[in-house]
Image (tube, rainbow, N blue to C red):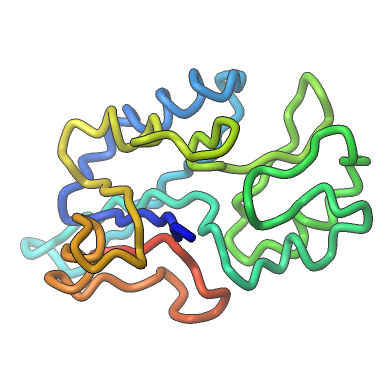
Length: 174
């Protein structure tokens, strides 16, 4: 089985918001709703200051705390979940250590990034990857050593943002 993942290179990210806007449009989110958040981290002292933009989203955890606490099993690991089962209790939001879930204003359903999953497969590439003008995002099969993502993880020593906390499938170059 294919194990999809994403690599985000913060050294290339320019914070243009193209990924967030593409995601909002693909998922029919209102302007104030977003699966992608940006964090600006400033390090150093003048005149040697470095500003890093770190986009975060659902980490697609293999050991997902959000799925473990869902009382109706509306959240599960293979794709986005089951909107019809979601009762809006927000347990999944509280359990997510990344703050990656949102409540859709129109439906009251708790949602998250799905890698643009459509039926049997995720988007290829997801909207955020396809619109990244700086090439900061790579998507692919983590189990295929010949895939672009696997090669880049090795070449850049990319790591999950919180180590092995949840067996994240989103890796960062920082």
